Length: 255
Ligand SMILES: [Zn+2]
Image (cartoon, rainbow, N blue to C red; front, top):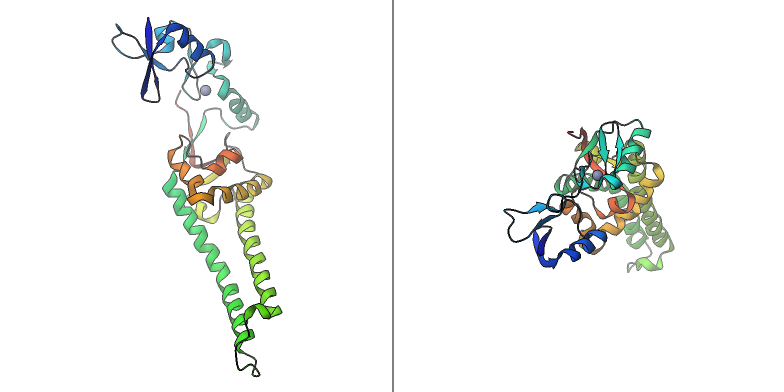
């Protein structure tokens, strides 16, 4: 007897029953994967179709084998969820806690606000730098022709200092606000919060790591940021790297 199975919404097959066993063994398909063979009215979960015992994970709602699940009171948890679940209990968070994740557009909005805020802080320094460079090039009375800027030691030092200032400003802004408040001012303005995957606070070292990981996300046409638009938990690349999530608020898992 041959079977078809769904990967995403894509029917795959036909395959023999032994192949179904093999795919289940290597994790390609799970108890919750929809399967179908000729004669069945509709697609069924692998658990239903093959009469395998299965429980619903309290946290992610997926079907999993009772042998691999753990129980906590009346709740069952799959292998993937148990670690986060017990971590939440240790941190004093309610185990029913989950997040309402902030999507791509609201995060893009927060990013713009942060960029504008940083621009406004940079602006007086940038104007001062430009005024200084102008004065160095044209200001001295003896110069009938302007001096090229790369020949002025003062100008090169001023550019160097400004460059270091901008780097430290951006890094400090991000690490300070995220480490202390769990959100940059842009995120605060839009009521977004950065948390760990178990919804606990982000530490300063993690905020620092996340700052550099964001640099990666900005490479290649912001593709690391755009990922957030397609992820079930709205994770950007830097959220994947740093095990963080951006949430609008916490909510309760409905049992
Ligand atoms: Zn689960």
